[in-house]
Amino acid sequence: MPSMLKSLKLLSDPTRLRILKLVENESLSVAELQEVLGMGQSRISTQLSQLKLEGLVSDERSGKNNIYTCTADPDLMDVARLAAAEVPEVAADEAALRHLLRKRRDTSRAYFDELAGRFGKDYVPGRSWKALAEALIKVLNYRVVADLGAGEGTLAQLLAQRAEKVIAVDLSPKMVEFGQDLAIRNGLTNLEYRIGDIEEPPIEDNSLDLAILSQALHHAEHPERALDAAFRILKPGGRIIVLDLLQHQFEEARELYADRWLGFAESELAAMLEKSGFTSIETIVADRETAAPKFQTLLGIGARPA
Image (cartoon, rainbow, N blue to C red; front, side, top):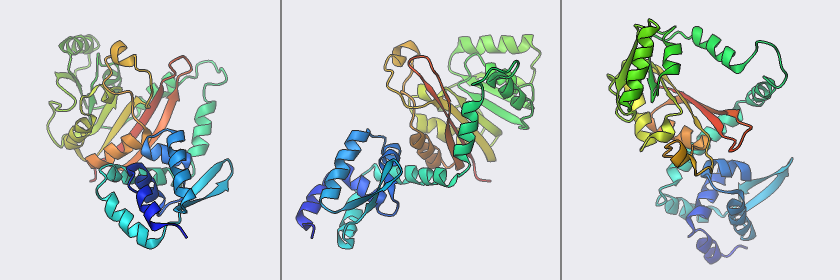
């Protein structure tokens, strides 16, 4: 029989407590725990080994993965839940777990990932992701759209060909001046550039049908505030699209590209969107660069409840 004193000592470590709380109701693999906790594989495996040795978790082989389940005494779990209430990361863990479980239920995702992986592998004249993206932009049916952190506004100008009105927001006066001049030369009278911060965009509340943050969130001082602001300026039923970098370790990006954050984990982006109030959240790694440092593009979407 496991020693209660040893078990309590194990759970005095916040990481082990977080892991036990996660596998209490859902059996999870090490890879899934990595995604939720944002920790390395070796660290998680070490903690699981200690929990298993004391009989607090068990594992079962499933294909290439070990699946871990909570086997702790119910009385111990009562204490664990009380202790977990004092660990600030637990709420984010729960949000990340909900996102993970939504992904599990999406049985078609693996199929579509496979399809996406094949697109562009074989050369076909005239077929490219660029052409496909431009075609899809042409059929977008949003009245009022904002490109937040627009830079010179290439995306905004593509969107302006279809939307009734596009607002491009950027912090750099030079970028805004360049983009506005280009829009005038191209006759895009429905495209307006505004100087502003994505954490406090100069846009009225409840006025947008679609907000886009394309490679902008990792430049924000406070990414959560940028998502809160996007929620606020969207109409009920409006949607958000986030394109950013998947979490990486290329530290040079801070100096080369003025990046504030080294990308985001899927679960981290999903948790931030949920905390801001968005629903119908989906995330996917949409692209993987082959050249070093092999950046990956993270796509997240959500909706403001109607």
